[in-house]
Each structure stands twice: as C-alpha cells, then as structure tokens.
Length: 156
Image (cartoon, rainbow, N blue to C red; front, side, top):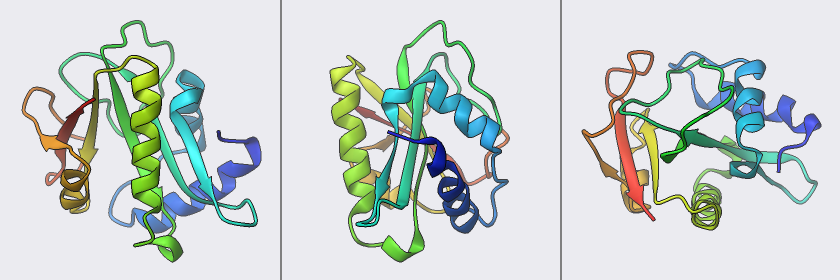
C-alpha cells in the first residue's frame, strides 16, 4: 500500500533510476494508484522508508499507455499493465525487484487477471525474461518510450 508520505520517496527513487527518460509527475503517479490501489505498492526498509515502488493498473486495447498519461476511469479491464517498477540503487541486487514482481503476480491472480504487460526500458529485458515475461508484438509501445523499449507479457 502507498501512503501519502511515501510519494516524496517514490519521486526521488524515480529521479535516480531514470536519467535518460522523462520523469513523470506526482499527479500522473497518483492517478495510477487511484485507478488501482490494490496493484500499486512500495517495499520498505527496516525504518519503514520506501526503497522500491511498483505502479500497475488495468488496461485494454492493442497499445500500452504513454508516459505521462493520467489514468482516470478505466472502462475495460482486459489485462494488467505494470507501468513502473523502480528500486533504490542502495538495494539493487538484493531481490527487492523480484519480490515486488512476485507480489504483483499473486495480487493479479487474486483479481482474476490472466496477463500482465509491461514496457521494458533501459536494457531491463533480461530481468523481465528471468521473471517469465516474453516479447510480444500483439501490443505496441507508444512513441513516448525510448526507441529501444520492448513490450513484454506474462501469462498468469
């Protein structure tokens, strides 16, 4: 669960993780949580400070939502879109990302989703492949993503 005081940490993690990608605003991030609070969460350290966040929401159609897009009412919920997973550099390589992805998969199954899609950026494709995701051409990336971005999916 994301609490109001977590947002300052979430934005700082985003800023440090995505140097070459346009950072999204607090308003955009909060719109994703408002659309699907059960599929947006943080991982905390022993002092309860967020060290990682994951934002996902229902989506539909044959393209992923663009960066910077606010999510309002989602009328069709064909699949779950994992919009962003970011881990503080201090916790890189400590399985935090894996735990977040596993938690999302469990939540998605409980919510009766059959598939999760995501857009792999910054060379993260090997990480996602190791989590059971595969490239797909069924859904396309928006031009707001890097030219090297890869849309991936995982069946649950």
